[in-house]
Image 1: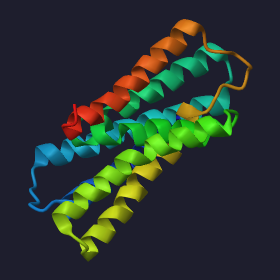
Image 2: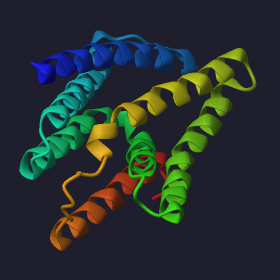
Image 3: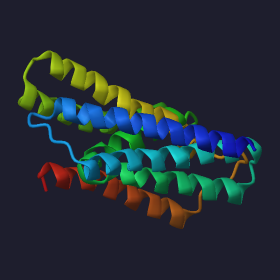
Length: 197
């Protein structure tokens, strides 16, 4: 029952955050457009994220079995992917690396600081890009506040997906290698999106 409750809460939070994100996107655009398809896709992506994170939270509260927790954490990661499609791809390192830096408290401080630096790069790039469109206007300041609030909320609320398992289990080497490759892809996507590569 607890997992059901957290999943429903996650759904609601996802819908609200998606609606806020849609409004924020219109605010920072120099030529705001509205389409039901775009709006439904954005809200739907955040809803999938919210559903997945709520489910992960609920399951992790009722069990610590290794295989169950591993599966739901993988589900939490898959549930994030829709928010990284399209223009959201640039923010993938912020949520992924920022989430690891914040929620893997057992890692060395040096590694966590490096992850924070990588996570901050897309935020800085987005702020510069928004400034190029809006200048030093109130819209820019509100846009930056929205940028930090929305993507910060995603990073914070994804805690149970990123947090380590408590049973002392260590990730096998092939999974570590696959994870590094996946993280490299997560970094490559926004670089391609920026037109750097």
